[in-house]
Image 1 (tube, one colour):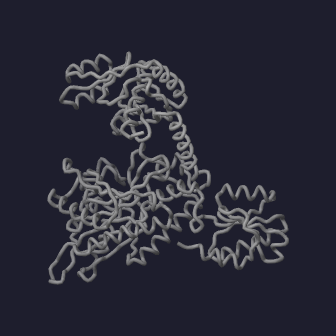
Image 2 (tube, helix red, strand yellow):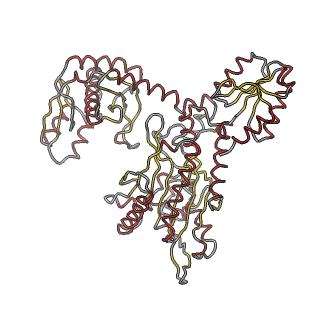
Image 3 (cartoon, one colour):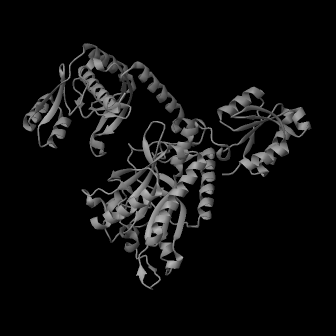
Length: 582
């Protein structure tokens, strides 16, 4: 099935969905219904939002429309006639769409249903044979949270039932691996309504994984010449005005004070930091710098705050408070390419070690020259820096796509992209070239000719947002973390109550070897304890009975290999120690 053909099929399925909804709920207003990757959706304005309980009835009506074999007929109307037509239909969202047109409008008719649409479509409704409605959701009109909240229905469609069933099986597997399900079931994190959306609580398991990742990242960054900083969580508006965040990013920041006084210079206004760059710059500015000091590489495990919209937040993937492996490099123009490639190498190294390297793609995010008000700096500077960055990317040999309008407000960037189990793409890591903030902050160095120059700044993360990385690891592994990252590596299982003291001693020996172990001291059958340890995705179970204790051995059962037989405890600990590092 070609992607173009499947898009046409799914677009037609969206029209069949809208037709069915209008038959069943005549007062509903139509918004938009595009095809998307692997499916389609349609947005409706309805007094009572649709729920999953409505889907079987709507799907049944869709099947009737498909069986009727209605022909899809296209016709065009001049703009004024099109406006009158949708007004007669009582469709205000279609009117708004038409108001943005300057030429004639395209419509498609199938039986007693007509919709504003550019097409293309399948010839007849009977061509939509294998489809399924999947879910409902809320969606703001045109993605604007200040506009009406609409009711969205998602579905999918394929040319054959076999393809549909295979896709539905993949969706079921994705649901099982969703970090929102796995992470809560395995007690990695939780959320609490009265704490707030986008503010997850990391439980001991989740906190332990983040601690291990943080140590891993900071150790590797130190090995590569980074200098660790620790900077404030908040600052006065004055700092953000210098950096440009106050003018270009304020709506995404949390202000500490009366927002009505945000522009009142007589009132002190603080804001939580959305990134650390203007703070780390102060370290550079603490004294005069020479070209011999460069490159200077600063890193920080930074807690950041961004005012994400309620509709965009999802588990640990997108949150309002998060932890970032952030860093900034001040360098001379001649050093930019090597430092940028070093940032790519660091990110690739870390992702390889944690097992996500094979899942990433690269995006060169550029500015939108038609929306210059979103950025600082002039067009000539932007075009020069983007050409410079493109040359670096081409020389690096990594495959990438280009995307206009995705740059930071102060410079272009390389985004390392990754998809979650549901196919939603997010940015995991960014590496940005900044040609402006050094000048705004008065950052200079003295070159070999004793002349003051502004350094280039590279903004980068190395493993990205730790919470997002944890979510992706949970989905990739279905909770079965690699041995070195597992929050509990060993479950020691005494067979009987008389073996509990020995089990405690084994836990102590493992702990002394910097291994993470627990003992299941419950008065339950050994088989039950083993099954529960397996459900908890613990890598290794150690069973202790009379013979094991007498011989200073343990019966080893691993998550991957099952029964590995009886092993000498001291020798086994030395072997496990060798595996317990990155």
